[in-house]
Length: 431
Image 1 (cartoon, one colour):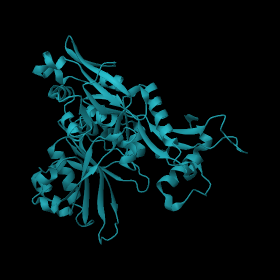
Image 2 (tube, helix red, strand yellow):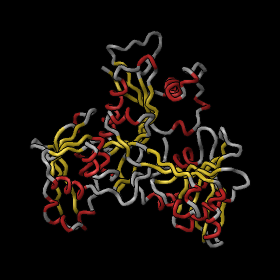
Image 3 (spheres, helix red, strand yellow):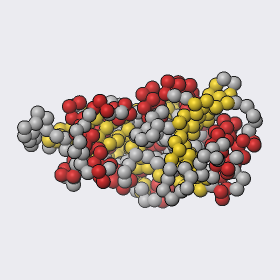
Image 4 (cartoon, rainbow, N blue to C red):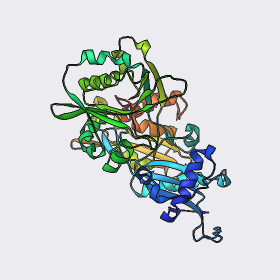
């Protein structure tokens, strides 16, 4: 048996030791004395948790506190899903020392973490995996892809030619974060799973970095910030000239987008390449003079997981049903899903999804039932369906959604309840 609880401040050095070795094994277990006074503010965000031996099996030796078996950190995020904001804690820094591995402790840690999320009323959990297959076996799955563009700065020179000669750039510091927030909110509102940022996140995760703090520049028009970018200039192996590595690009309209691209182009005397992040899209390829001048790489993004199937599916917005003609007839017929969850028992069962309409709102009630299911789905695939990343038809083709029969009606019902989102998800924040 194990005991899951907050990691006390007295064991911050143990947390640092576990995480450092887990993600930088070439440096070996930490042998230097940990100094909490030197810990950067960005490392203090979130809540540390540890999995400990229970009282019967604990062996503290001469220490006042037993060492945890493994550790993790929770970030108490809120994220946008289908137009509404939902609690979606971020799981990070999952680390186990070598002597405790292959003993099932991480599984216990994840299970306890989900229980805490559930107690807090969270709807989803998100994470950036070190290995996708590892977390997929526990019910998390990919929630968006992302695009990375790379090109010579001269390739972006078209932006300066196309935009009107208006607006101005200024460099900002962390104290200026509030001026960027409206632009971030306007840009991120179009993308599912965008995080709500607070002051600490802006200061210690946007304006600062683990190694080199980024430069932050804003483009203003008519006295208001309409776009901004954060970037570093990096020396890279095998390249004679440095790379302008943009870490965030946000804008409210096409004119602001062009302004930011022209800003990058104007670094042609200083860098040999420009690297730009984006959602899963190819907009830049349609703007440049020759698309072959741009390297475009699509990468996997973070992973998502439903915390509580009944509560989460009941809490989602189904406003689109009000506009669907079929919402008045056969689409109101309930559909039952057998959900397979390898980690928590409250999700492992059969659930009924029934549509009800009261006044001007359309809601879906999800509750456990004992009837035979119309379809079977694993919780990771259901999570993708819920956030709009994959459709029911796509999941069926991939073997992640199976029907108890060949009822096309079930697929159509799920497609109506959970349409893919018109724009891709884009959780851009690393944690």
